[in-house]
Image (cartoon, rainbow, N blue to C red; front, side):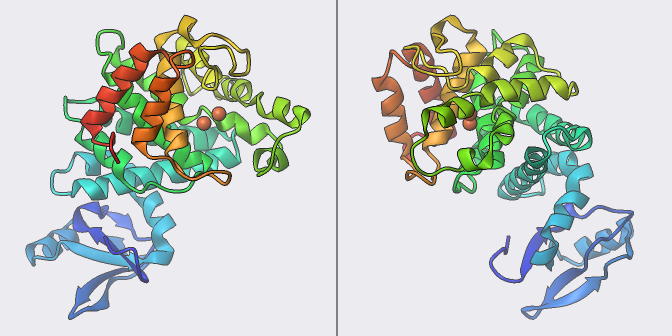
Length: 325
Ligand SMILES: [Fe+2]
Ligand SMILES: [Fe+2]
Protein backbone atom coordinates (compact mmCIF):
# COMPACT_ATOMS: atom_id res chain seq x y z
CA UNK A 1 0.00 0.00 0.00
CA UNK A 2 1.59 3.22 -1.13
CA UNK A 3 0.73 5.83 1.47
CA UNK A 4 3.93 7.81 1.24
CA UNK A 5 3.23 10.13 -1.66
CA UNK A 6 0.16 11.69 -3.18
CA UNK A 7 -1.63 8.43 -3.97
CA UNK A 8 -2.96 5.61 -1.87
CA UNK A 9 -2.79 2.18 -3.47
CA UNK A 10 -5.82 -0.11 -3.15
CA UNK A 11 -6.47 -3.76 -3.86
CA UNK A 12 -9.15 -4.16 -6.58
CA UNK A 13 -11.16 -6.36 -4.17
CA UNK A 14 -11.69 -3.21 -2.15
CA UNK A 15 -13.82 -1.50 -4.77
CA UNK A 16 -17.56 -1.44 -4.26
CA UNK A 17 -19.62 -2.35 -7.33
CA UNK A 18 -22.80 -0.55 -8.44
CA UNK A 19 -22.09 2.52 -6.42
CA UNK A 20 -21.41 6.11 -7.45
CA UNK A 21 -17.77 6.98 -6.82
CA UNK A 22 -17.11 9.80 -4.35
CA UNK A 23 -13.51 10.09 -5.69
CA UNK A 24 -11.37 9.56 -8.79
CA UNK A 25 -9.71 6.19 -9.35
CA UNK A 26 -6.35 5.85 -11.09
CA UNK A 27 -4.39 2.98 -12.53
CA UNK A 28 -0.65 2.99 -12.95
CA UNK A 29 0.80 2.92 -16.42
CA UNK A 30 4.55 3.12 -16.93
CA UNK A 31 4.98 4.48 -13.43
CA UNK A 32 2.37 7.23 -13.83
CA UNK A 33 -1.20 7.55 -12.48
CA UNK A 34 -3.80 7.55 -15.28
CA UNK A 35 -7.41 8.44 -14.48
CA UNK A 36 -9.49 5.25 -14.86
CA UNK A 37 -12.90 6.22 -13.46
CA UNK A 38 -13.84 9.75 -12.45
CA UNK A 39 -15.69 11.00 -9.40
CA UNK A 40 -19.51 10.88 -9.63
CA UNK A 41 -19.57 8.01 -12.16
CA UNK A 42 -21.14 4.69 -11.22
CA UNK A 43 -18.66 1.87 -10.93
CA UNK A 44 -20.18 -1.37 -12.25
CA UNK A 45 -19.25 -4.94 -11.37
CA UNK A 46 -18.32 -5.58 -15.02
CA UNK A 47 -15.84 -2.65 -14.89
CA UNK A 48 -14.10 -4.22 -11.90
CA UNK A 49 -14.23 -7.66 -13.59
CA UNK A 50 -12.55 -6.31 -16.75
CA UNK A 51 -9.86 -4.66 -14.68
CA UNK A 52 -9.08 -7.92 -12.85
CA UNK A 53 -9.23 -9.94 -16.14
CA UNK A 54 -6.63 -7.65 -17.63
CA UNK A 55 -4.30 -8.46 -14.72
CA UNK A 56 -4.67 -5.19 -12.80
CA UNK A 57 -5.04 -5.97 -9.10
CA UNK A 58 -4.11 -2.57 -7.74
CA UNK A 59 -5.62 0.88 -8.32
CA UNK A 60 -4.98 4.17 -6.57
CA UNK A 61 -6.83 7.15 -5.17
CA UNK A 62 -5.57 10.56 -4.14
CA UNK A 63 -4.38 10.54 -0.54
CA UNK A 64 -6.70 13.52 -0.02
CA UNK A 65 -9.67 11.20 -0.62
CA UNK A 66 -8.71 8.67 2.08
CA UNK A 67 -11.49 9.75 4.48
CA UNK A 68 -14.10 9.46 1.71
CA UNK A 69 -12.71 6.07 0.75
CA UNK A 70 -13.00 4.67 4.28
CA UNK A 71 -16.62 5.81 4.49
CA UNK A 72 -17.36 4.32 1.05
CA UNK A 73 -15.81 1.05 2.20
CA UNK A 74 -17.84 0.68 5.42
CA UNK A 75 -20.69 -1.38 3.90
CA UNK A 76 -18.24 -3.96 2.55
CA UNK A 77 -15.78 -4.06 5.44
CA UNK A 78 -17.00 -7.48 6.55
CA UNK A 79 -16.86 -8.89 3.01
CA UNK A 80 -13.38 -7.51 2.57
CA UNK A 81 -12.18 -9.08 5.81
CA UNK A 82 -13.43 -12.49 4.71
CA UNK A 83 -11.96 -12.18 1.19
CA UNK A 84 -8.90 -14.46 0.81
CA UNK A 85 -7.59 -12.37 -2.07
CA UNK A 86 -7.10 -9.29 0.10
CA UNK A 87 -3.69 -9.29 1.81
CA UNK A 88 -4.01 -9.60 5.62
CA UNK A 89 -1.91 -6.49 6.22
CA UNK A 90 -4.33 -4.52 4.09
CA UNK A 91 -7.32 -5.90 6.03
CA UNK A 92 -5.67 -4.93 9.30
CA UNK A 93 -4.97 -1.45 7.99
CA UNK A 94 -8.54 -0.91 6.79
CA UNK A 95 -10.11 -2.28 9.99
CA UNK A 96 -7.84 -0.20 12.18
CA UNK A 97 -8.34 2.99 10.17
CA UNK A 98 -12.13 2.57 9.85
CA UNK A 99 -12.64 1.76 13.53
CA UNK A 100 -10.43 4.62 14.67
CA UNK A 101 -12.15 7.06 12.33
CA UNK A 102 -15.68 6.28 13.54
CA UNK A 103 -14.51 5.99 17.14
CA UNK A 104 -12.83 9.42 16.86
CA UNK A 105 -16.14 10.88 15.70
CA UNK A 106 -17.90 9.33 18.65
CA UNK A 107 -15.25 10.67 21.03
CA UNK A 108 -15.93 14.16 19.68
CA UNK A 109 -19.69 13.74 20.16
CA UNK A 110 -20.15 10.98 22.74
CA UNK A 111 -23.91 11.31 22.80
CA UNK A 112 -24.45 11.22 19.02
CA UNK A 113 -26.68 8.16 18.56
CA UNK A 114 -26.14 8.00 14.79
CA UNK A 115 -22.36 7.77 15.10
CA UNK A 116 -22.77 5.25 17.92
CA UNK A 117 -24.97 3.10 15.70
CA UNK A 118 -22.45 3.37 12.88
CA UNK A 119 -19.66 2.29 15.22
CA UNK A 120 -21.70 -0.67 16.42
CA UNK A 121 -22.53 -1.84 12.88
CA UNK A 122 -18.90 -1.52 11.85
CA UNK A 123 -17.34 -3.05 14.92
CA UNK A 124 -19.64 -6.01 15.60
CA UNK A 125 -18.68 -7.88 12.39
CA UNK A 126 -15.01 -7.16 13.09
CA UNK A 127 -15.32 -8.53 16.61
CA UNK A 128 -17.09 -11.60 15.23
CA UNK A 129 -14.27 -12.16 12.79
CA UNK A 130 -11.60 -11.76 15.46
CA UNK A 131 -13.37 -14.32 17.64
CA UNK A 132 -14.11 -16.83 14.90
CA UNK A 133 -11.88 -19.82 14.27
CA UNK A 134 -8.83 -20.73 16.26
CA UNK A 135 -6.34 -18.57 14.37
CA UNK A 136 -4.91 -15.51 16.04
CA UNK A 137 -3.75 -14.19 12.64
CA UNK A 138 -6.32 -11.38 12.22
CA UNK A 139 -5.70 -10.17 15.76
CA UNK A 140 -1.96 -10.44 15.25
CA UNK A 141 -2.08 -8.19 12.21
CA UNK A 142 -4.33 -5.67 13.92
CA UNK A 143 -2.24 -5.45 17.05
CA UNK A 144 1.03 -5.47 15.16
CA UNK A 145 0.13 -2.79 12.67
CA UNK A 146 0.79 0.89 13.11
CA UNK A 147 1.88 1.37 16.68
CA UNK A 148 1.52 5.09 17.14
CA UNK A 149 1.54 7.96 19.60
CA UNK A 150 -1.35 8.03 22.04
CA UNK A 151 -4.79 9.34 21.24
CA UNK A 152 -8.06 8.10 22.69
CA UNK A 153 -9.62 6.44 19.64
CA UNK A 154 -6.65 4.22 18.65
CA UNK A 155 -6.05 3.54 22.36
CA UNK A 156 -9.66 2.28 22.67
CA UNK A 157 -9.34 0.20 19.51
CA UNK A 158 -6.05 -1.42 20.52
CA UNK A 159 -7.26 -2.06 24.09
CA UNK A 160 -10.26 -3.74 22.48
CA UNK A 161 -8.04 -6.02 20.33
CA UNK A 162 -5.91 -7.07 23.33
CA UNK A 163 -9.08 -7.64 25.36
CA UNK A 164 -10.57 -9.90 22.68
CA UNK A 165 -7.33 -11.90 22.45
CA UNK A 166 -7.20 -12.24 26.25
CA UNK A 167 -10.90 -13.07 26.70
CA UNK A 168 -10.73 -15.70 23.93
CA UNK A 169 -8.31 -17.65 26.13
CA UNK A 170 -11.14 -18.11 28.69
CA UNK A 171 -13.35 -20.01 26.26
CA UNK A 172 -15.00 -21.99 29.07
CA UNK A 173 -16.07 -18.86 30.87
CA UNK A 174 -17.13 -16.53 28.08
CA UNK A 175 -19.87 -16.97 25.53
CA UNK A 176 -19.26 -15.15 22.25
CA UNK A 177 -21.90 -12.65 23.24
CA UNK A 178 -20.09 -11.85 26.49
CA UNK A 179 -16.81 -11.31 24.62
CA UNK A 180 -18.61 -9.04 22.16
CA UNK A 181 -19.94 -6.96 25.05
CA UNK A 182 -16.58 -6.81 26.79
CA UNK A 183 -14.93 -5.81 23.50
CA UNK A 184 -17.39 -2.93 23.12
CA UNK A 185 -16.69 -1.91 26.72
CA UNK A 186 -12.93 -1.98 26.02
CA UNK A 187 -13.40 0.08 22.89
CA UNK A 188 -15.32 2.74 24.81
CA UNK A 189 -13.65 2.52 28.22
CA UNK A 190 -12.27 6.08 28.01
CA UNK A 191 -15.18 7.77 26.25
CA UNK A 192 -15.89 9.47 29.61
CA UNK A 193 -12.61 11.39 29.22
CA UNK A 194 -14.52 13.57 26.79
CA UNK A 195 -16.52 14.96 29.73
CA UNK A 196 -13.31 15.99 31.52
CA UNK A 197 -12.17 19.55 30.67
CA UNK A 198 -9.51 19.48 27.90
CA UNK A 199 -7.24 21.71 30.02
CA UNK A 200 -7.14 18.90 32.61
CA UNK A 201 -7.27 15.94 30.22
CA UNK A 202 -4.39 17.26 28.12
CA UNK A 203 -2.30 18.71 30.94
CA UNK A 204 1.36 17.75 30.67
CA UNK A 205 2.40 18.66 34.21
CA UNK A 206 1.28 17.36 37.60
CA UNK A 207 -2.40 17.53 38.53
CA UNK A 208 -3.64 19.56 41.47
CA UNK A 209 -5.83 17.57 43.89
CA UNK A 210 -8.94 19.10 42.32
CA UNK A 211 -7.81 18.28 38.79
CA UNK A 212 -6.92 14.74 39.79
CA UNK A 213 -10.32 14.26 41.32
CA UNK A 214 -11.97 15.50 38.06
CA UNK A 215 -9.79 13.19 35.97
CA UNK A 216 -10.58 10.21 38.17
CA UNK A 217 -14.28 10.55 37.44
CA UNK A 218 -13.82 9.52 33.80
CA UNK A 219 -14.50 5.76 34.28
CA UNK A 220 -17.88 6.64 35.85
CA UNK A 221 -18.60 9.06 32.98
CA UNK A 222 -17.77 6.26 30.50
CA UNK A 223 -20.29 3.93 32.15
CA UNK A 224 -22.96 6.63 32.09
CA UNK A 225 -22.37 7.38 28.39
CA UNK A 226 -22.48 3.69 27.46
CA UNK A 227 -25.69 3.23 29.45
CA UNK A 228 -27.28 6.34 27.96
CA UNK A 229 -26.58 5.29 24.36
CA UNK A 230 -28.52 2.09 25.03
CA UNK A 231 -27.55 0.61 21.66
CA UNK A 232 -24.35 -0.53 23.34
CA UNK A 233 -25.95 -3.41 25.14
CA UNK A 234 -23.30 -4.25 27.71
CA UNK A 235 -23.91 -6.63 30.60
CA UNK A 236 -23.30 -5.74 34.23
CA UNK A 237 -19.87 -7.40 34.40
CA UNK A 238 -18.73 -5.34 31.40
CA UNK A 239 -19.94 -2.16 33.08
CA UNK A 240 -17.97 -3.11 36.21
CA UNK A 241 -14.92 -3.70 33.98
CA UNK A 242 -15.26 -0.27 32.32
CA UNK A 243 -15.73 1.44 35.67
CA UNK A 244 -12.73 -0.44 37.13
CA UNK A 245 -10.15 -0.10 34.38
CA UNK A 246 -7.94 2.03 36.67
CA UNK A 247 -8.54 0.02 39.85
CA UNK A 248 -5.56 -1.88 41.31
CA UNK A 249 -5.40 -4.93 43.55
CA UNK A 250 -3.71 -3.00 46.36
CA UNK A 251 -6.64 -0.53 46.47
CA UNK A 252 -4.46 2.37 45.22
CA UNK A 253 -6.46 2.74 42.00
CA UNK A 254 -9.58 4.76 41.22
CA UNK A 255 -12.46 5.69 41.20
CA UNK A 256 -13.27 3.58 44.28
CA UNK A 257 -9.95 2.06 45.40
CA UNK A 258 -11.45 -1.41 45.09
CA UNK A 259 -9.35 -4.58 45.22
CA UNK A 260 -9.42 -5.83 41.66
CA UNK A 261 -9.18 -9.44 42.85
CA UNK A 262 -12.73 -9.25 44.17
CA UNK A 263 -14.08 -8.05 40.84
CA UNK A 264 -15.25 -10.24 37.94
CA UNK A 265 -12.87 -11.77 35.45
CA UNK A 266 -13.95 -9.12 32.92
CA UNK A 267 -12.53 -6.37 35.15
CA UNK A 268 -9.17 -8.12 35.55
CA UNK A 269 -8.93 -8.76 31.81
CA UNK A 270 -9.68 -5.17 30.86
CA UNK A 271 -7.39 -3.72 33.56
CA UNK A 272 -4.40 -5.83 32.41
CA UNK A 273 -5.03 -5.36 28.67
CA UNK A 274 -5.50 -1.65 29.28
CA UNK A 275 -2.28 -1.26 31.30
CA UNK A 276 -0.30 -3.13 28.66
CA UNK A 277 -1.66 -1.01 25.81
CA UNK A 278 -1.18 2.26 27.76
CA UNK A 279 2.47 1.64 28.61
CA UNK A 280 3.52 0.37 25.19
CA UNK A 281 2.40 3.56 23.45
CA UNK A 282 4.15 6.92 23.36
CA UNK A 283 2.50 9.54 25.60
CA UNK A 284 3.18 13.26 26.03
CA UNK A 285 4.74 12.67 29.43
CA UNK A 286 6.70 9.46 28.70
CA UNK A 287 8.18 7.25 26.01
CA UNK A 288 6.65 3.96 24.88
CA UNK A 289 7.91 1.04 26.96
CA UNK A 290 8.94 -2.28 25.43
CA UNK A 291 6.43 -5.13 25.77
CA UNK A 292 8.95 -7.15 27.76
CA UNK A 293 9.39 -4.35 30.32
CA UNK A 294 5.63 -3.89 30.76
CA UNK A 295 5.16 -7.62 31.35
CA UNK A 296 7.97 -7.52 33.90
CA UNK A 297 6.25 -4.58 35.61
CA UNK A 298 2.94 -6.48 35.75
CA UNK A 299 4.63 -9.60 37.15
CA UNK A 300 6.69 -7.56 39.64
CA UNK A 301 3.51 -6.05 41.11
CA UNK A 302 1.46 -9.05 42.24
CA UNK A 303 -0.32 -6.83 44.77
CA UNK A 304 -1.73 -4.72 41.95
CA UNK A 305 -2.23 -7.31 39.19
CA UNK A 306 -3.13 -10.89 40.00
CA UNK A 307 -0.22 -13.10 38.76
CA UNK A 308 -2.69 -15.81 37.66
CA UNK A 309 -4.21 -13.41 35.12
CA UNK A 310 -0.92 -11.79 34.14
CA UNK A 311 0.64 -15.19 33.36
CA UNK A 312 -2.33 -16.05 31.15
CA UNK A 313 -1.94 -12.70 29.38
CA UNK A 314 1.76 -13.38 28.75
CA UNK A 315 0.78 -16.64 27.01
CA UNK A 316 -1.70 -14.74 24.85
CA UNK A 317 0.94 -12.16 23.93
CA UNK A 318 3.33 -14.97 23.02
CA UNK A 319 0.72 -16.33 20.60
CA UNK A 320 0.35 -12.86 19.17
CA UNK A 321 4.14 -12.64 18.96
CA UNK A 322 4.28 -9.23 20.60
CA UNK A 323 5.94 -10.39 23.83
CA UNK A 324 9.49 -9.45 22.91
CA UNK A 325 8.84 -6.50 20.60
FE1 LIG B 1 -7.58 4.04 28.82
FE1 LIG C 1 -9.03 5.51 31.55
